[in-house]
Image (cartoon, rainbow over all chains, first blue to last red):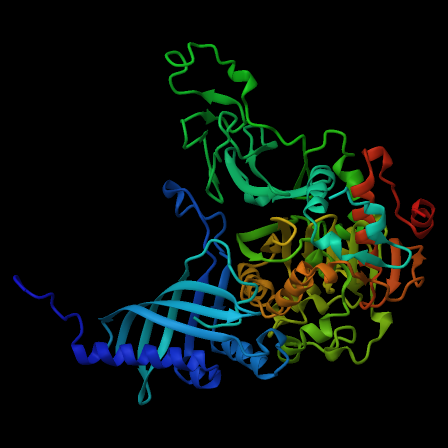
Length: 177
Length: 450
């Protein structure tokens, strides 16, 4: 190869691989519906946010009609706990039988922040669901995370998501992204 | 296939529907012509298009329309299609435009729908094009009721206020409770379902029966108030605490009567409860004690035939756009009183999204049930079966203090029967003169078909 290699900065390979592993293990917990274990990966003040996409002309992209915008998720930990508690009642009939669920995580980039023990982590997740006699759904979400040291672990403090579908293509979003 | 006789497909006296009405393409086409082509349909809330040139892109049945605020503050609506070769002229959800320019050949139209610009008009058309004949196709009638803008393709349709009829008395519990009225917040939550459009209308217009069972999971974890009529599991009910109301030309209401239950599924409802307590006297003075004390703040499902539903308290507003017999798009907004604080509006918006948005814990219970109610009819044997809304027949009554036909309790199927009755009346009437007008039990009986 001629010319210089791209630098591994902004973080070293060890840090990068550690975050890649973290995102992969998070995806595994979600695929396995280990939701209480997943909640343990979140800081107590986590903000889990996914606005509802809208299509404006380019010259009016920021022309929101109202300071309050609709969201798909705008949850603190207690709200995520409520969603998990709902699953755990076993009364959520659409999740029985269990649906096939795969979180495919890619496009990972890790950046240090100005704060010690805090990182910005970008990634994309493709959520593949197979349910109702072979009906398949694929949803793609871009994620901008903040991960932070809390206690002896690195935990998710902010997940800012872009849902890349103008119309939601499934009859429920009984999933986390 | 021969033309289906709509008279055979629904029988109001037994609460029977043929499952063909959820499946057959020719029934669907007839709905587009007879129902979506003639009824008043929701277009937009006035708060969404406040300035001249503000537009909102939506659907009337399968017809895509642009709703545009005019220079004189009136509102017009047009088919979103170029009069030259038929291309869509606007792709954005909403915005502000001085003109709409077609992407295909560059024809441009003013906010009033007139054709204002044709490229090469002189050199290629040799000035032979009469531009006055190629304006956008206008929706025949557009009118507002207390902030809600409706349109109808039918120039012969009765005025909007007559169409809404006695339902206005109930709609005002939300639209006219507070002096400044209501507004919709943010962009629509749009979800596509493989569901016939009538099934979610039926579900929300009168089906309190499914509440305790289909939503048992979320109701177990999300209830913050102990409300008699909202019990989990369909195990016990107290019919005196709620009622269904219909007649009213097919519009309907389902309501608790406690003045608070609309906020029963907010994890921390105190801010809303404070708002109700602080303003109840104002509302009672505007709407009277009955509506102010018993309805305002209650869990209320309001349905305007054919496809608009709003739930004050849970504070969502919804319209269903049909996309074929087996598909529809559901658009949901949060709707609030303008007087509410930003903090309360934010709380309501978040709760709407958490309960009835795309990832809403209630909505996510309904989807699969309604999908199966639609897709099972692909089976030839299955679709030739009948299904019924025959619960508590003959229990309807009148009330001197309230319009409409009333059945006590949240659990019943009276409203669904009248929804399908109105559906059948619209589907069989050749003109508005043949569409019966009824409000009370006596009028409904007198106009019922044999």
